[in-house]
Length: 221
Ligand code: DC
Image 1 (cartoon, rainbow, N blue to C red):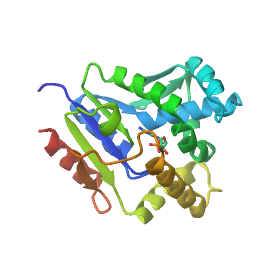
Image 2: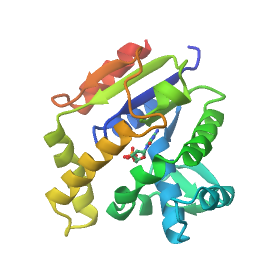
Image 3: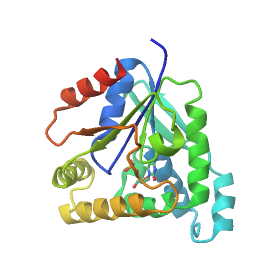
């Protein structure tokens, strides 16, 4: 079968990466987590005290950032490297989640990330998830999925994930963070979160992982 570009966009914590990973594995495709790129840039900015309200500082900082994904055969996961450091675990922290939507709203940051993402898709055979993949990064993608899920279910899922790493986290912190990110992501000026006109909606509130995978595979075939 000819290799395709598959895009999965949608709200925070509605299971995009779970589906994207399953799909990539099943099809033998590369999986790229575009949100991880914005998170890694945020980590770099925080560590290096970059004032991201200052465009010059942002543009200078971006010149020092190199982002790559490497497949870890042990964990069977694609992991993100920021300037040769594996930051896959660090970028999932709530400290990063708190700031990432602000950083991802900056035009220069988006131009940098989108150019990298487009390079990664040059050979097709890729599943990429994010917020603007079907609208801006790959507007001609072969298959576009827009995921959504009930907001309470999303909060619960993300809480469980974060609680395993940090038992001090509260459900309110997670809820506030998701609401804030959904708001900023869908109201920003540059490539806001939108369903592409030709995207298929997948509401997985009441679907098992197998059911959502079957739904996506049916689209691919
Ligand atoms: O998918 P995620 O929750 O890891 O994404 C983190 C943030 O990055 C999200 O709040 C918005 C931003 N993002 C974006 O603006 N565009 C993308 N393609 C992916 C993520």
